[in-house]
Image 1: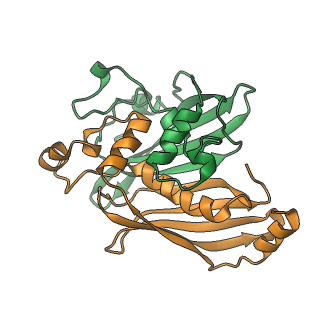
Image 2: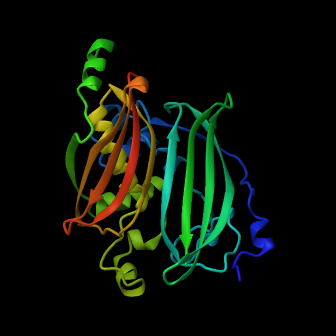
Length: 150
Length: 145
C-alpha cells in the first residue's frame, strides 16, 4: 500500500511565486566573510561566490510565520504522511556569473515525489528545482534539491 | 594566465591528483554570522541550551549549506582564475557541530581533454575520519568569471 495518494502526487508540478532580488556588494561581503572565504574578489564583493543564491533567496517571512524552533514553513510543499527529514542532496549548475547590481528572479517547482522501501520502512523522496534567471530571462543557476522523509 | 599557460596547467592534471586540504573550525560567532547572512532563524544553529536540552544535539549544529560552500571553496581556490565550477552534486550525510575540526579535500576522478573538463570528488571529513559531506564537482578550464 503506497503512502502516496493521488491527491499528494497531484502536487507535482506546483510552482512558487517568482521572487526577484537585487545582488548587493554588502550582501556578498557578509556571505563571503561568514563562509570563511579567502578570495579577494568575494571578500571585496566584486563577484558573488558560488552558493550566494542560498542567502539571496532564503525565505523572508514575518515572525508569526516561523515555527517555535525558528523555521519558516516551505509553502511549496504539501503535507507529507512522513515528516522526519533525513539528509538530502543538492545539485547545482552554474551558467552565468553573478555580480553586484544584478537583478535575479528565482522560481521553485516541486518536480517529483516518489517512494522507496528503506531498511526500516518506507521513505518518501521529493525533488524541487529552483531556476534562477536574469532580467533577460537567461538561466543563471539551476539548483535541484532532493529530500528524504522517514 | 595566458591561454597557453592555462592549457599547460590542464595538461598536467591526472586522474588521482589531490587538491590541497583545508582545515575548518567554525565557532559560534561564524555560525551566527552565516545564519544571519541567510536570515535563517533555526534555533539549533544559535541557541545552545535549546539545541542540547530540547533537540538532544551535543552542540550547535553547523548549517548544511555552509559545508556545501566549503566543498566549493576547496575546488574554487585551487582553480583560481584558470577555470570555473560548472556544477556540483553533494549531500549532507553526518551532522557536524560548532567547534568541530573539519577538513576539506578532493581528488580528480576523470579528465575530459576535449571539453577541458574535470570531475573532482570532494569531501568534508571530521576528526573521526567520517565523511560528513561528500560530493562531485565538474570544472571547466579556460573559462573564468
